[in-house]
Length: 305
Image 1 (tube, rainbow, N blue to C red):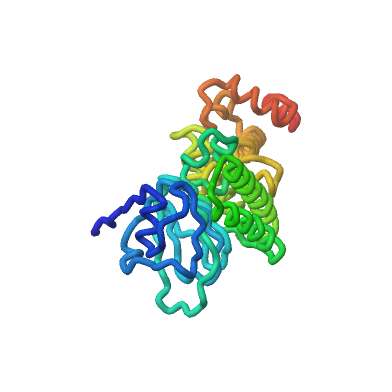
Image 2: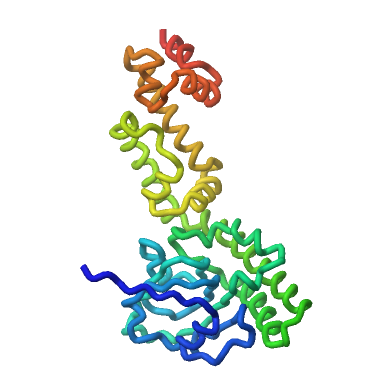
């Protein structure tokens, strides 16, 4: 199989040139109108890597986006977020007749230098590699974000000084905070997609505890997230919103469920049950069991006598 070429775009100016745009008014930040962008003919044949953040607010962009190792749900989604050094590919739809609109906010990490956002931007889960859906917005939500972007555009077209830079940083923070709120709303309202993830998690843990636990030990949060093609932070946030528990707590709940079955239906000793569940030391198993159930494994077993 022929290996796909990877092209890195190091600067915002380079991005502008590649997409047939005039030079940016500032080398470290730019707001681009989607309708003015020219797509390279071979765009779908190349993996792209940017050295800067890209926040997209779009409509009518037909096609698919591949972010990391999976397809990104962007067909109907309005907003998407990418951080530097992430690999993505765009497969345009040549048959799309919808008029493209929206904008793209490009932010080089150097623009954030010596600001509060330089550190806090890492806490926003939706930049994570394996977040697999765009942000779907109501009309009211879309207007809120567009108003913020319009404020950024006004400052961007001024001569950026220390005051305007701090104003832009504040507006970007507002944009990210509102987006975080809307993503959490989406976790709850897009029930079908989220419940599918919960179902896949349950099936994954069932299979793991039945077939792999003895050989591999307890599954890690990183392993579970990778198997579900979702970043660890995104998965834990989703589960926390939907169920009140993070991924580690779900893994422990499954472990206790299996342990209770073994303790109540077999004659295996507590040490043997602990070993089958991937524990080197039965004391560690007993401690976790008591923490989760308020009784020891032995007390649980004796309750059936």
